[in-house]
Image (cartoon, rainbow, N blue to C red):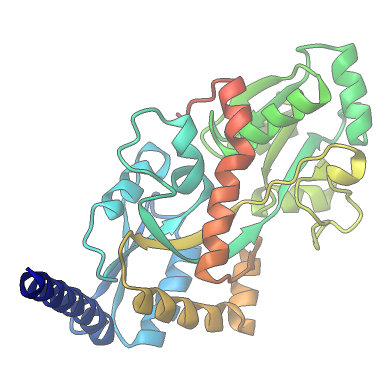
Length: 326
């Protein structure tokens, strides 16, 4: 009996050894003679940062990195596609709050598990969200906005990039926390929101602080009331955060890179090291700033925690208002 158990133990040890050496071999050979694909789960034109990161990875590992756009369902189609790929380091995906975290709660029947089905390699960017008003809106601060909205229920309108978008959820959270009722209006992008704000057709917006808004804020055509980040935005040093104005809400949109669950740790580590070095460079900092973003590398463990915290931050608001992604 002992000899039989001993034989089984030796066999199991042998199997574990073979599996470990196979995984180690896969990692040590990576990348071999096969290009790496970085899936960007959105349409062309939104992949500026993805292409910067892909070029840096290509240079760092000495292998071609192809950016492949797989748009649809707010990023769920491309992200779900990568979840089903072989975890060998040759298929990666850009990660954003919706498809990488919040769709867990806003998209019933999602064919993948955002938090569980991926290795979180690195966060590569963070940006600022801003609460902006048309220039002649009768409020100069958050407190004045809240007072006006309470005095004029359902009369104030706020644009956003669609149900389930970051702007939509922040607007919903502000209404919930401040006890006000604002009419939320969905758009297909930031430019038409800005157009309607300039014409006076819509009062407010919560959106990414990017080119669409910055030039009009600087020209005095739009007025920022609050920044949604933990700290004031460098480009708007005189505009206080929501927290400074008494509303305990911090929401920072981020971008990152994920791989299918089971991708060897050595490959995850290599990608992280290459991209961390790039993201700390003056070149990356300058090029990310062009898009209103901050290069912000993390360890894999830190990025995993960011994704987990993201889902937890919005879970109750999503459930309370039954938010469903478009």
